[in-house]
Image 1 (cartoon, one colour):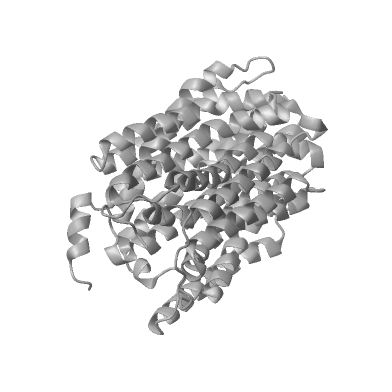
Image 2 (cartoon, rainbow, N blue to C red):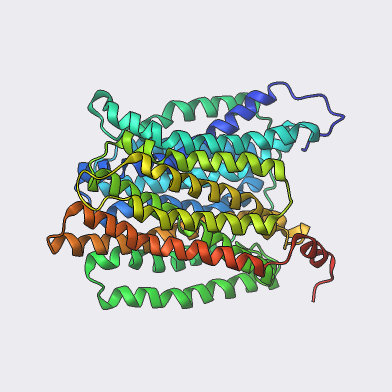
Length: 487
């Protein structure tokens, strides 16, 4: 039910757009706001390092695993209905997070949040054509980018303010509870102003594929996060070894589904597109270094150096400003210089990671928040510079018929890259931290050295990205590849 330029403008379309933006905003802000609260959560529950990693990782994993099937389910039951259900589930998950009685209760509630986020996110962009004629869609899509930039800036500050205010003695809980009234407003706005969109009940969902993908992912993630905590016994290594046959089973099942003409979680045509596979790996490299970086930085600032949550959030704001600045500039550049921009973004991120150890304190009393401004701004500038052209370049390697599936798959692998990077960087950081503190090292220096160890991973990821992007065809060559007949 896409609108055309000859249709009369839909009444209330901008109110409906506001509901979509608000829902997307609380989903995005929830990612950044949690990083500021990590030390408070660890202290409140007496949580182990691995348990704290699960609070962040489980949301990313759940979101990634459910993103593709929920996008498909939106087609089956109707985009509007799915969006409203997703915001409702996310809001309920937020309430459960805010009321969590234990660290594992919080982890379980984050699963509910992740499912809700995956339910509503694919629907937002898909609903826009039903609200706006083509001449208005450019502004509508630009608002999504602006909303994402504002969420990245607002999250750390809002988290710090809410925790610092200790509203009604609730400590960290308001960072989740604040989503409840916002979610209710988004649901009411969507029910009143978003038009009903037709469902396609004949479409199927690949339940077996979802199960196999989830099992393969958890067989890797669980050992990486819990291995150090339990002393790396044999069964941990056996779990990781089992991930390979599980992945092979997933690929086999997808090919079987394709041969039978049935629903696939990931279309087999994408597996056969070498350039898309390479591009997906590059996307995973970009996002592998981000969530883990902010996790260890928040712990360094708050636990290692005594920052308040608000001080910690304000310290990271230059990164968000860099992302917002680069995103605005990317809109002006359009589709020009895509690969050079991606490579430059990767190099700027690597420069950020290389500079940070020089501004982290080596003894008590030496920390300076202003010293973090330049490295973090450069890092944000790098991320904002790389994201848009990277997605354009990778999707440019895909035939028009597969673009929708490729876009969803790319977002899923983006999240999986973040989860894997979080596990690896957390392992490097916490292992060094435990060894240093046990040996009686100066705590401030030990935390700084732990950050330095973790940054080796992100630095390598960003440098590899800057080089690997040149393995992708130039955009004009990709267009020619799209027009060529399949082999």
